[in-house]
Length: 178
Image (cartoon, rainbow, N blue to C red; front, side, top):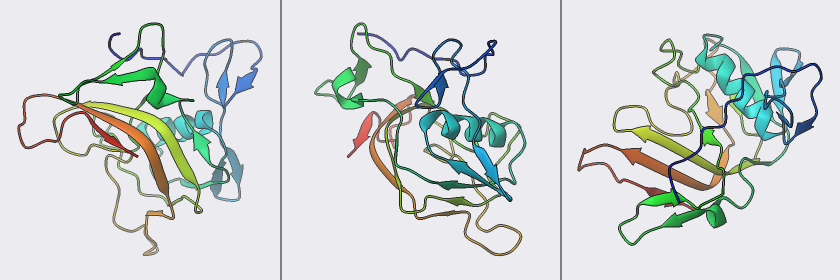
């Protein structure tokens, strides 16, 4: 076993062949589809692409999920959870790490647009962060957009593994949500 293998997602190649929204040659994320002023997200690569846009300063953009999204197929089979709650990735396995939308380490770009889960589910993802503020699927969001609409709505999260590195005894380390 070992630590999570970081799989980068900002590379380019001559032509892309996507599987679950990630190029099989260069691992670039498939861009979400813009319809009007809303990005339609139907796969994991588009979800990672959207997060990168927000985290790099385009934090007033809107999204809607158009399908259920599985980030890491069979995630719970790829990790081992010890009695003390410590989780490790099994030997030979790769797990795609999630960087929260509105991550405070990226330009303090909290999410200000609308993220409509449309009743869909995002599942099998892993969040690894050090102890601090603003941890989770969304790190920081505005309470409402400029029109008073709720920023995040109708979103289901399932089978997520959250690993929190650090020494803060008040933090529930290495928790798994099912």
